[in-house]
Amino acid sequence: MSEYEWVPRPPNILERTIAGAFVAVLLLAFASAYAGWRIFGDHDAKVAIGATLVGVMLIRLLPQARRKPPT
Image 1: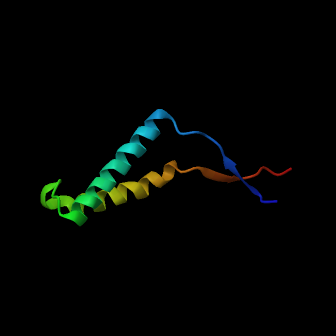
Image 2: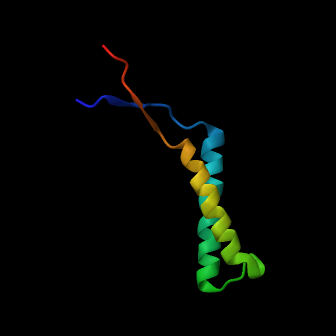
């Protein structure tokens, strides 16, 4: 048996909204930079990099594992 357990907690509506907006901006920025659509003007690559950095900060919202209490 493992000495860690998942801490189950479903995401609330705010977390789902933030994740959805993040994914939309990230995909749009990468697609715009790759395809040359210039949706964000000359800043497509910068927006994509910024969205990636925000995604790294959103890792905090991932499910967590905690050590089981001693028995």
